Amino acid sequence: YKSYFASVMATIMKGYEAEVEPVKRALFAEALRKAAAGTTLGRGAPAAGSGAPGAAATKEDDDSGRRRGLDVLDLGCGALPHARLLLGGSSSVSDSSSSSSSSSSSSPSSLTPIRSLIGVDSNAFMFPFAEDAAREAGFAVLGPLAKEKEEEEQQGGTPKPTARFIQASAASPASLASSGIPDESVDLVLCTLLLCSVPDPSQTIAAAAAALRPGGVVAFVEHTFDPDPSHRLMRATQRVLDPLQQLLADGCHLTRDPVPLFEEAGRGREGEGQLPLLRLSKVERFCVEGGGFIAPHVAGLAVKL
Image 1 (cartoon, one colour):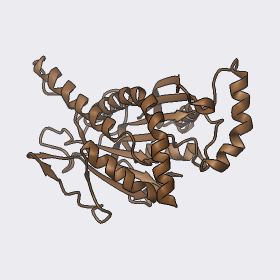
Image 2: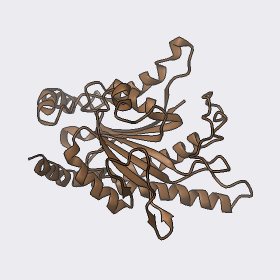
Image 3: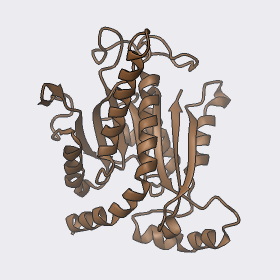
C-alpha cells in the first residue's frame, strides 16, 4: 500500500514540480553560491563581517583552504523531485567560478560543486523513488552501511557527488543529531513543502540551523497562508479547509507562513547578547497556477551567522 501511495504521489506532484521549477532552479543556484562563499572562506578565520568563529582546517579542505565540495541536507526529501536542479545549480556555480577566474587576475574563486547529499524523511517508502531520482541526476547512491566512509564513485575519472538517505525526524535539533547528522556538518539545508506539516516548524528551523556550518544557508519553498488581507475568499477557504487538510495530507496546514518563523529565529539570541542564529536574505512570494487553495507560495534564503 505504501509503495502504491508513493507512486501515486510522485505522479501527482509532477505537474506541481513543473510549475515551481523556475523558482527552485534560481533559488538553489543562489543558495549554492551563498553557501560556497559563506562556508569556504579561510577555514581558520571568520568570514568577513559575520562575527562567527571560523572552523579549523580539516581533511575536507585542500591545501589552499578551499573545501572540496558542498554538503547538502534535504529535510523531508520525499521522492527528491529537484535532484537534477541541485546538480544543475552546482554546475552553474562551477561555471561561474571558472568564468570569473579566467577574466580576473585574482586567485580562483572559492565556489565549489556539491560533494554530498543527505536526504532525510520519516517515510522510508519514498526512498526507492528518491534513489532513482538521485541516480538519474548524476549522484552515486550510497547504501545504509556507508555512513562513515563515503566511497567516491568514478566516472570518466571524475568523482560523482554522493547521495544517501536516512529515515529520521526533523522535528528538533536533538532528533536530527540523534539520527547521525552532527551540528555544523553541512553547508546547505533544503526545506521544501516540509514546514507546513511538521509538529513545530520553529523547532525544525532550529534543527536546520544547528546542522549548518557558520555561513551556511537554508533554502525554503513552501505553500503558505495567503498574505493579502484583500483575498478574503482565499483566506476564508484556507481556514475552513485547514482541519480537513491536516487529516488527509499527513498533518499539512493551510494557515502557516514560515517567514515570521525565520524572522523569530534571527531574533532568538539577541536578548542574550549573542548574534542572531539566522538572517533572512531573500523572500519571494508567488502563486502556483492551478494550485487552488495551496496556490500562495513563498521561497527564500536564510544565512547562518
